[in-house]
Length: 137
Image 1 (cartoon, rainbow, N blue to C red):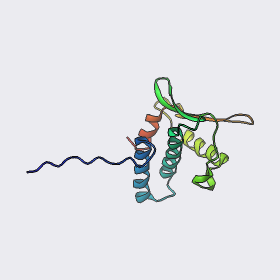
Image 2 (cartoon, rainbow, N blue to C red):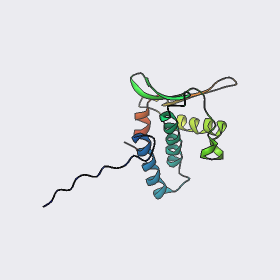
Image 3 (tube, rainbow, N blue to C red):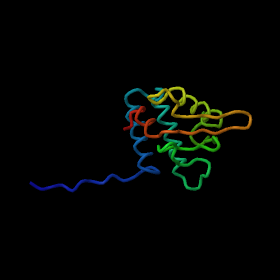
Image 4 (cartoon, rainbow, N blue to C red):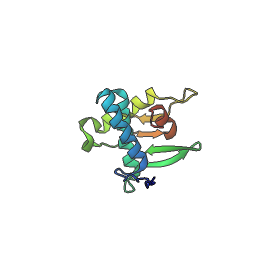
């Protein structure tokens, strides 16, 4: 019996994390179609991870928060290249939706969104927990 060499999958996205999220998006789309809340949450997270992976973007980056992997969004951007509902207001709404829907075991928000007249920032405090709750573990 001949042993086969394991095939290595080619990275097609900005990082393995983004690739995993994209794969889960495809599975969710096949199961529940485009309009499901889980698909929309995965899509938003995928876009944010791609922006955080971009070294030329100083406004969105990875960080540590209380010893956990986090993503800091210094200024919520307008990302119209992804669709009309991804302008600044749309991104704020999508991030607020993530904040309202996903909390940790202590009932604390995983995503914090700070928007006022002069504030326009957000933070995903525990990326691992958010991905676990989205089923991407």
